[in-house]
Length: 104
Image (cartoon, rainbow, N blue to C red):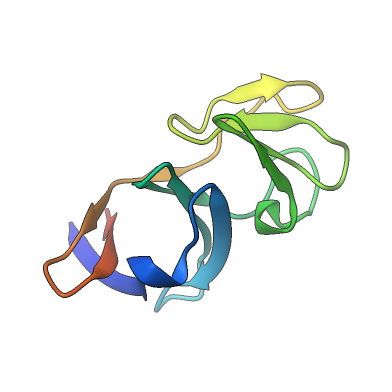
């Protein structure tokens, strides 16, 4: 397991999402839900759309392609047509103010 430094938490407004490319070019979505930080794959498992282009409603990210949704906290599909969970990454807020993602 390794950690990767991403963005400063101050760059991510409350209840927003931002796209970030990891060192291996994996694209992730980083979320701020009321001051808690989460990260999932940024690519919808139903269609080739970036979830970071979608909207947050409550604890869910809405895919901009077919408007299915996923639970941001767990990566689990919440509404059809999404049925395959998103890859989810553990996050932590570093003392330096950056959000770190654990890569397995």
